[in-house]
Length: 261
Image 1 (cartoon, one colour):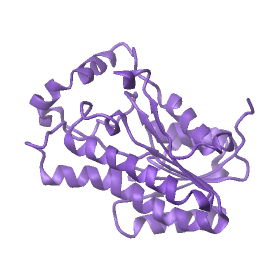
Image 2 (cartoon, rainbow, N blue to C red):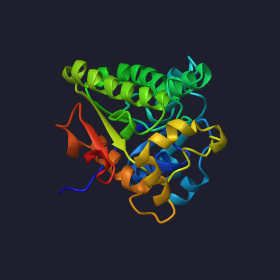
Image 3 (cartoon, helix red, strand yellow):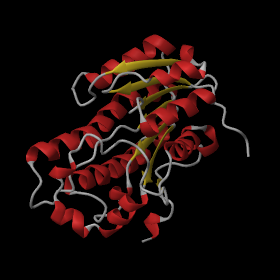
Image 4 (cartoon, rainbow, N blue to C red):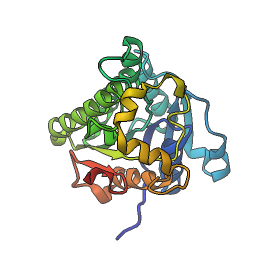
């Protein structure tokens, strides 16, 4: 199989400061891609050590704000030129495992705003550019919770199911424009996605009903069944590249077999 070469390509990637986003930034740069990273957190220092600093730019901001997606696209074009070849929507937040009986409006709106609304509005801005050039690859990071009701709380589950719907609809309606849109559904990954949530705020009744989650949480102690960010980054790299040029509208589990349950 050919190696992945993204020389001359330009990518936007969200969630670029840590975890899967940062690992994917490094993979894109190693493949020769120019990368505009975005995150609500500051830019990662480790990019400087890759020797590809000239091909990496970063915009810090909150993509749930109405003006932020357009501003990100403009910043990318100012740095790397008019064309944008790749969009990877990686950024996401967890919920407290609250059910419909206990979820608060504030939690629901925050999770859906970050995990679903922001990717959709960023896709809208990016496809305006991709349509001009009749080409582009978009990959959205959904979750095992995007295919199951037994993996997380209501807000996270709704947001990730919705992102799959947005992916399929975009793939179908924009295929004649040369734009591909796929989604991946990771299982448990060794990242800090839950770091911003106080475990004391978990809905423990709902959490207790999610038996697979308990097994995976226990596995964090040994690493068994837990993927690295680099594993997921490699899948994103493939779907962003021309090696996957005939793959469109796919929802791909990346979960070490969890999806077979």
